[in-house]
Image 1 (tube, rainbow, N blue to C red):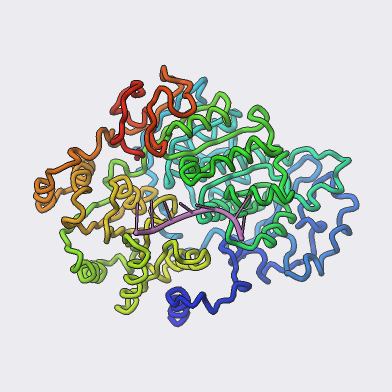
Image 2: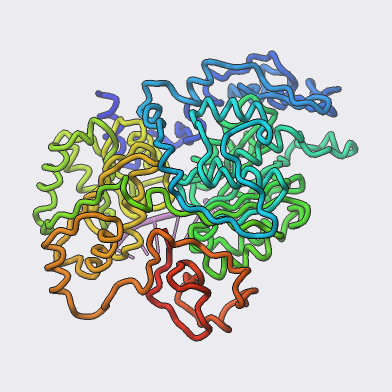
Length: 607
DNA sequence: AAAAAAT
């Protein structure tokens, strides 16, 4: 109890924290290597974290200082659960039960139970794969095509059968094809790229090393085999956590780099061995410029949430990383791109980064919405607090699962979480004015169930995969119906059921029409007051969405369109604001829009 | 109004 209070004090008090910066442990290192539990046991290998590599084995051990004072007493030793590649063979590390408990969780963990996913719901997700010679999807996790060790790790992670993305991505990668996938978080896409790519690498081993440069090799520079780029720090950290699980006992050592955390620590970690690198573009560029990373050995390049990366202005950096450094060319590597939407700039990126790829379009988990019960309440602004209290105390949510509350402003996030704490609801908050560590801490409290109520601004609306969210409350509704869809999508994930509650009043009238359509589409009850409000708000903006194709909204393989290939900017498609236009995003339009149609209202997203 | 990313 007092521990929670203490953490919450640290969060809510705005003193910049008594927690001094030097004590900050980044999320991926908590309970992990670097802590004293992982102190050098001195038993294995040389200085390189015990990662033996046949052409290394001779004369290694001494080079980096033997064991004890390794890395200036930081207590870092060989990475636990680290296997090796010796003489062309994969030598997995022995099982480490203590580590397994830490990594894969214990039955007491709230997330452990909930991983009893309702996988049957996945089977309803529509998938479309197009391109030349699309390989047959797999139906089970088996070896072949997947590596035995990977299968064990998948089992430890309690994934029992492949999600639709994974069914396709596994054979696509093992057939050495590139992939462009329209899929969202929650569809199992992290496994979708990690499984096949790790599996391949487990079997083929590290890239051959030029013997002449071997002394220099990896001394100050990391040569990853797999690079995963994603837009946000939290996402990158999440992917890294997954990667650690699946790479357990293998020869591959995952690393993560992102801004806001100590770069020296990251560089030291890289030197210990980096075979799979998960990175945000900014920090990666930085490390590339410093010469700490070489991309020359990349076999697999993965871009996750590519559309968000472009929205956030990362395109120049991404292009520089992929085309302007020492990354092997399109033909010498395999590339997988994931994106929720498929606007023109993503198509152009795909054209440059991918070759002869398979286009995979995956519908949204729960797009049929049976697993999300949407509840809309008429609540005036000044009643919101008390109605919220009623809801929180009348449901079992707080005990059973996690409640995510969305508000409009950062200030409201603070106010409301403080208010809830004073009413004995264990709440915390996340928004852009909090420091990175506060945000990560809040997220940790939330995920662990220590603070099962999280008050959030739009920062948490997309991308974060928080299992076990049973209830999403739209305390303040977003201005855009697409944002609403993303928000309620934080619950009912991975086939589980969830409730979404929205507070609506006249202030939300521009959203009401879209909301009604959505509820109707999803077979949800449309309360009378909502229809009444809708009739009231007759002015302006008739019909919110031109063409929401609803549950059949696939991304489209534009290569079939007569408009292919797309031209850079302007030209045929008419400029749309922000470049968020995409053609074929919805079957509603049939084929790609004709040249002078300007679909301002066609929505910037599909789901 | 809010958000994201290298310092």
